[in-house]
Amino acid sequence: MLEWLPNYNTSLFKGDLVAGITVGIILIPQGIAYALIAGLPPIYGLYCALVPQIMYAIFGSSRQVAIGPVAMDSLIVATGVSTLALAGSESYISIAILLALMVGGIQFIMGVFSLGFIVNFLSKPVITGFTSAVALIIGFNQFRNLFGVDFVQSDQIQFVVEDIWMQISTFNKHTTVIGFISVVIIIVFRKINKKIPNALIVVILGIIIMKYFGKNLNDVSIVKDVPSGLPFFGVPELDLDQMRELLPIALTLVMVGYLETISIGKSLEAKQDEYRIRPNQELIALGLSNMVGSFFKAYPTTSSFSRSAINQESGAKTGMAALISVVMVIITLLFLTPLFYHLPKAVLAAIIIVAVFGLVNFKEAAFLWKANNLDFWLMLSTFIATLFLGIEYGIMVGVGLSLIVLIFRTSRPYVTELGKVPNSNFYRNKNRFEEVIIDDDILVFRFDAQIFYANSSYFRDNLDEMAANKGKALKLIVLDAESINRVDSTGVEMLKERIKYYKKKGVVFYFAGVKGPVRDDFFRSGILEIIDINHFFMKSNQAVKFYKTGDRKHQEKYAKYIHQAYK
Image (cartoon, rainbow, N blue to C red; front, side, top):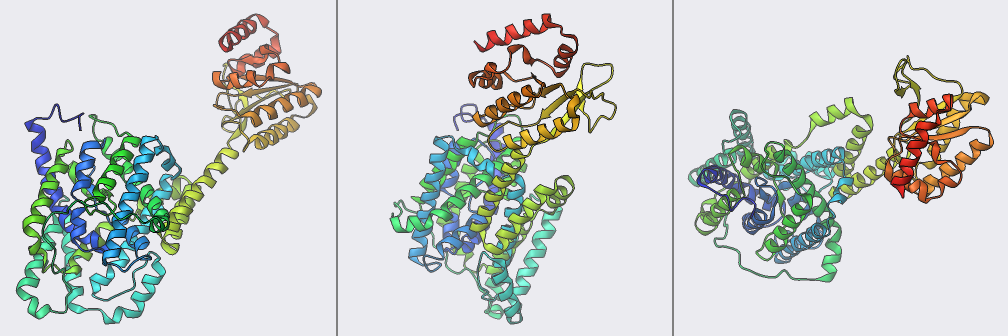
């Protein structure tokens, strides 16, 4: 906050005022709707829009990200807490609040110790698959309110779809009509202009219809009493057994919440030049939002895709916009909650369904199919696992597959033989440049990754295979090391063993383009005991030229230079 507050002025306030009011108008019905997803009374959705927003406005590095209740986190909360208590009960509420404290504590610790990099193990295809699956799960779970039928709630879509199929004939006509009309109105207004508060419009229409025509629609479920007043301070009940059971779901919320915030923040950051997102600061801000929020009855919160985009489009420049949204929620809690008594749950279901189905990313799937098949299958696997095994297992599968793909890619990097481009000093991939010159007695070998324990055998096997193809004519191997940025002890020992092996066969081994830190590792590991310092070159062309002409003057000068640099 201290980055923008000292220079705050009237022109900034104008944009923040419009954005804060716009987001506040959207946030109030969304907060009520998302609390229902979480299995909590509607008022708790509004509690989530108070203290968490204030804490993020103070500590967050993004000035436009909108924090509060979101559909995905709400469903994860419902999934985890429903196994420990009855939805809506006092015990259920206290566990959900305790979960916010746990999530915030973990996020804060990760931020303090700069552990934001951990989330990098979730690649974009995994995030796309996970988000799309969760969107479908949330949407299908809201059909119970859209059709007025008490369908089963689950984070495994097959059970929800099966129950919908079995009970669809018992749908409530009045509820279904109100729900579908709300969906149509929201979609139409979104097509016209995204800034139009479509959620507020359908909420007002729903309340008016039920208030004045409710006698003929007494079979339509409504929100009823929403308590007035602000949340009071209270420390969540700490139960070690419950905390142990909640830990897996808390870790899931930590990952999902941070991923949402970072991905939204980065997309908004790209549209301006005034600030930069700091990942570890975001973890600290999210952690404080959830921890302090839990003292004021908030369940786990994170950033909202839709509200953040609207906040930016409406002219928000600083965190003041979030504080204005908080003021609007406070006014609602103090004076306006009785107005929501007649609000149909079908309208809230319509708001949620339209919002989450927009998160199903068909474009990204089509792009990955064309651009990278492995990433496409990674996305699809995460999508299917989340959809049919549940949210917790889905994210575990996503992380596991990401690590497997990472290991696969680093253990089997690209390798090739280089040839000389005619009338030049450059060496290029012989598989891409047909005109390059290949010498029968020289192998210029390029390895496009670090050399470490996971790929040292792959390096050796490919080197031996290319050397074998040269046959007895081979007299020189040049390792083009420009793409090698790290080497561990296993990699160095493998190289030393190969140098000795080819030395016995009368083949000389040269290095070209070795980076300073890698060269230091070579020297510390005793490679100069089996190979001369004159066997290190700046470029592959220099190595080949030295072998062919024996021009030692230039090479001795370079050898002296790198020896001095190492010392």
